[in-house]
Image (cartoon, rainbow, N blue to C red; front, side):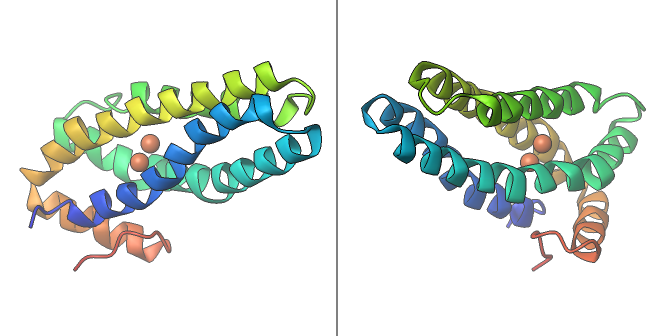
Length: 154
Ligand SMILES: [Fe+2]
Ligand SMILES: [Fe+2]
């Protein structure tokens, strides 16, 4: 098992919901205004209730550990930028008029693309480096568990 498997498991759970963003985007044009509003609310519940807290734990623990691992204090800045771009799209989704299917669709497709690329960077670049540093990974997992995150050391 790779040292980062618990972190990858958490991503796998989130990815199921992230795929719903693209499905919801596709649905929007053929729904009534009330149905659009409900679907948007369900997506916002996931984004605000689960995804953004996940990002906050990363900024508190994973990213500083990443910067220490690669020996460059600003190493995680591009990833924090991604989080800010995701928040801006969440706000765009929230602000969209329920009658404006185009805008809802644009916000949802934008979120899907941004989050998918961001996750791929975390998995293919950051987690890959942590897999080569099991001690640093153990510390990340312990710290994430201590703040009530989802990733548990097996
Ligand atoms: Fe992230
Ligand atoms: Fe993540």
